[in-house]
Image (cartoon, rainbow, N blue to C red; front, top):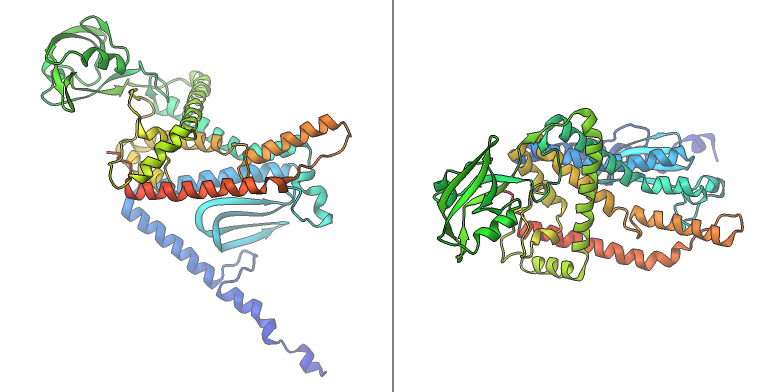
Amino acid sequence: MTTHQTDAPSDRDHQPELLGHLGGDPGDGRMTLGQWVRLGVVGGLLVWLTAATGVYGLIMVLGIVVMITLHELGHFVMAKRAGMKVTEFFLGFGPRIWSVHRGETEYGLKLIPAGAYVKIVGMHDIEEVDPADEPRTYRQQPFWQRFGVAVAGSTVHFLLALGLIFILLVGVGLPGGEIVQKPSDWRVGEISEDSAASRAGLQEGDDIVAIDGRDTSTFDDLRDVVGPRPGEEVVVTVERDGERLDLSTTLGTNPDDETLGFLGVGAGVRDDDRLSVIEGVPASVDQFGAVATESIKGLGKIFTPDGIGSYSRQVRDARDEPAAEPSDPRAQAASDEEDPNETRLLSLLGVFRIGVDAGEAGGAASLMLLFVFINVFIGIFNLVPLLPFDGGHVSIAIYEKVQEWRRREGRRYLADVGKLIPMTYAVVIVLGLIFVSSLYLDLANPVSVN
């Protein structure tokens, strides 16, 4: 073998460099030709999205991306603080757009901005790890460090929601200083044309106190009083600008049922009320609890036999029935009839549409309110005690700690995660069905937001 033959680069030697220029991933922060193309595709889609949906469409996409990134950043920071080995932190999925190695971690962007992920070494006992890295695996860390990493994502969502609630209560002002309004916190929001209400002289913003002396502190009370009395003359007692007025009128008949009385008012919420900074702190915590309670109730209604049945009917009849308008979470008039919104699951497309219309109708405050509910719901949903949710890792950590206490052997107990694989596959399949069916529902029967 001659010196020339030994030193001359072969075609194989040139392949990594050629692949790098065309679309490989050097991982040193340099952009390849293929990655520039992918970045251009993403940029073009954002420009098209803004042109098609306006600035609120762009804000929705960026808001969701930032929210997901902060979720994963929570896991990342807690894992690093615990000394765990983190090998990847990527925003997006699919082909790489850009990446760079810093220390032992590769940071980067991928083509599809539908999420983010952090790769922590040794998340469970069935993962094969280099023996040199074993002491720094997730599974070998103390309980509280594993617990902290597992709940970090949901904690970030809760903190984001708390921050947004505080801004809404103190900086923007909300009706009654509340995110979730009580049934009694209602006022006249709209008045039907040529109705008993319009003939009586009712105005938007009036508080209807009573009808013929019967209390109407909730909108249900109003319906109970008005419903049985079509065509009857009544006295409507209202409060307006601190003054109580008695207004006489004759009730009409309900357009959908002539046997029912009809006043012709729609429920709204009370006037905006900004809280002081000192008032805002405890109020934010209180309202966060109210939103969390509503979210848990919502999940409970969805994942029950009745809720699953209702959702299945919505998917089955998606092309036959118009979608109901989404209820305002701050002022929901209760009804004995089934509310399809209570069991309606929205895809990202559905959330995006609602966000765009909410922004156009109510500006930044409406978008902030929407993101409060999104963050709380995702934070709670992500704590479901099943893999692949973060709650699955929380439940495993708790189970392992209980086993360590019970055995009193003074050494680390590792749960056999392999036994959970069938259940995990089942959960993934259910999530896939929900993803596909909710997307179909939002395409075939979009939620009406106007």
